[in-house]
Length: 315
Image (cartoon, rainbow, N blue to C red; front, side, top):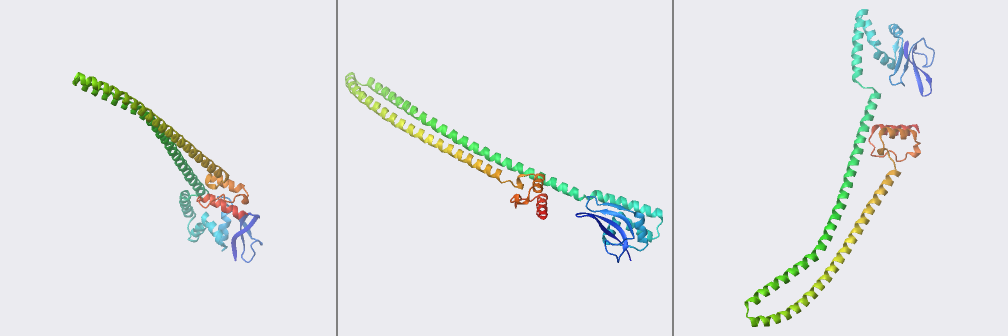
């Protein structure tokens, strides 16, 4: 029985298949009757060279195509044309039917993307998602930095306000004591005008002595209050300095931790830090023993995972 099948030719890892007519009892690479075409399934478009007339001739002679050759003939419309011939259709009817069939096939091919187009679309979608995640991380980092700066600024404003209020309190207390003393003197003067002269003189003498004593007491009280106020202001200044030093230490610790994190990030580079194209190129051009930990478990991009698996298969 005659058989139309593929015969492997070419070199290692780069085959080219010939479409041949041979006896089914012969081995695959044995003697053939006729070579009617070439089929290259390595190229993206599956290049095909076929003598259509000879293929129809051998089909009419009863040659049976293999499953792969039948699929090729079906895609080229040869099996459909053979079906029309067996129905005794005229050449005009066959040509019209084939033209309609080719138009429908072209419409279908336009709607269905090729493997290369699907791969390109997938890569673009992953690139867009990765850029979106990077932008989101940058915005979150900027928001955290802004909140930190605002917190430090508010603490400095509160410390300045406390120092200003501490400096204003002694002055206000001194002015209050002077106003109280003046009010008491005015009251005493009013009472003195209403009393008799003798009593006024006696009381004046007593008041003078009392005033001298009260003046001395006031002076002593002022000196004591000023000493206490100075001690309080000194303590408050020391506390303010201590708080400033603590805040500076905290800022230095935060900066040191940020620097350490940045150094750690620079030391360990993973595929999450790269675009898909860069990660794929790095995987392809780097030995496998140097890629340990490069692709993390969180990597969800299909193209990067596929390049990683291909690298392991090659090794």
